[in-house]
Length: 135
Image 1: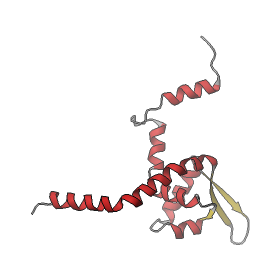
Image 2: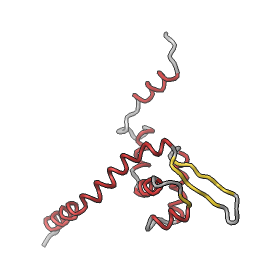
Image 3: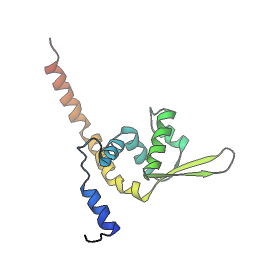
Image 4: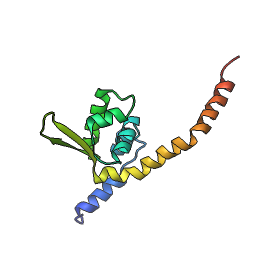
């Protein structure tokens, strides 16, 4: 049996990922990055490092608990870093990692698509609701 390098083993493992399987790690990651709060947080951080309070003000509707949980999960996944500066009060900044930065072209495209096509979606919803609602 031939010996395989670590890179070959990683490549083989990557080929085994199938996001259609519930246990697939790629599916778990897709679930994470498709979350609306994740998308909004990453988009906000694309402008550069931000403090927790800045993110909280910028992202309308996110609760303190949800923002904290989402930031922690993104840090765990290696998509952002958290920097603590000892001061009074303590300063905490969040910033995209290089890995997180690789997601930004995709997320920016989806955000732009949603903003561009919202009138068409509204129209489709209205048509659907008018046809689907019994008289």
